[in-house]
Amino acid sequence: MLLIFDKDMQTMVYSDEYRLLRGENDMQELQTLVLAQEDTFTTTGDLWGKGYVISGMISSDDNLRYLYLSTTQAFDDQCRDADQRLLLSVALICLICLMLASLLAAWVYRPIRKTVRLLSDMSMLTEWDRKEHMDEIEAIQRSIVQAKKQRDDMDEEIQERMVSLHNAQICALQTQINPHFLYNSLSIINWKALEADQEDISRITLSLSTFYRTALNKGKNILLVRDEIANIKAYLDIQLTMHDDSFDVIYDIDDSILKYETLNLILQPILENAIHHGIDLKQDGRGEIRISGKEDDKDIRFAVSDNGVGMTKEQAELILTADSKGYGVRNVNERIKLYYGAEYAVCIDSEVGRGTTVTIHFPKELHAEIKHS
Image 1: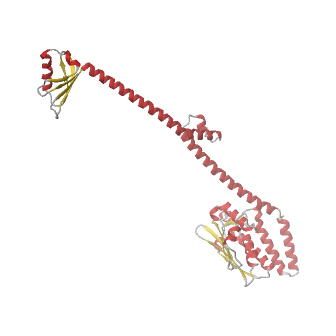
Image 2 (image 1 turned 90 degrees about the vertical axis):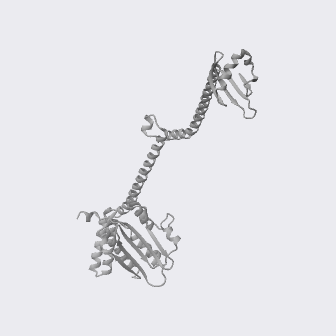
Image 3 (image 1 turned 135 degrees about the vertical axis):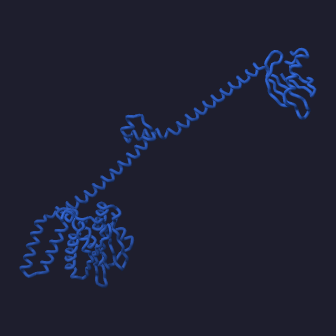
């Protein structure tokens, strides 16, 4: 029910429900209740035998009083309807959010499911994930860790096989020569040379015997640095005889490194390369080869230097690759890296017209003969 009163509480406008009110007493109840309120109010009260919710205000523009009356029952019904509409709206919003969340989850989960299916097809899921109810993310994580471990194990196995292959190649080369027959033959040649007073032949024969003894090394891949030095001294003695002592050899080897172990035949190929591709091609001046062997806190370091024709940086880099025409220095580099690690690669420093220096280094390790002595 809508009512509009003037300042004297005389009715000016009313709705149809007002027609039901009878007599001045009916109006007197309403006027008494309204005049007891503030200018703007909402209250409840009993009027004409019913409970009402009454809202009112006085307009500051025309000083009229506006009232709205609603029975308590009607007000409760409206509130109940509003609550139902609110609950329905909330339920509808929740349903929409649930549908959107399901669609989003399906969109996000699709690539994860494909990845898990792919891992399952590739037999990369662990036994735990196959038997138990899996957490897909954890299953992928475990599969990645497992794949990383398998790759590391495979790399280690390949490394070991390559080392074994190189050792087998060296052993195969060594077994092609019957050492006893060779030593006996050289011994006879040496005896005959001494009998004929041919000291040069005897010296070369002894050098050749020393060279093969240290090169074959009883089929072993490791020997003392002392024996490796004996090997290159015997080799260079033979080369000096072949070259009529046309070049000089300077040794700068610390005695302190002789007790350590080394791979066999790592210096001879470097010296052979220095002679054939450096000294032999030198056209002016006397050739010189310098071999140095030193130690630091952790490593043994060898350097072989010559004053031959040298080479360009590109040529030096090519020597250590598969495109190299020669095999000796490249083989030394591969053997050292396989046995000690890639950080121990051979280093070649050369300059055209000035010569070449080849450096190798490897960890200090006492030979087994020294450890047990």
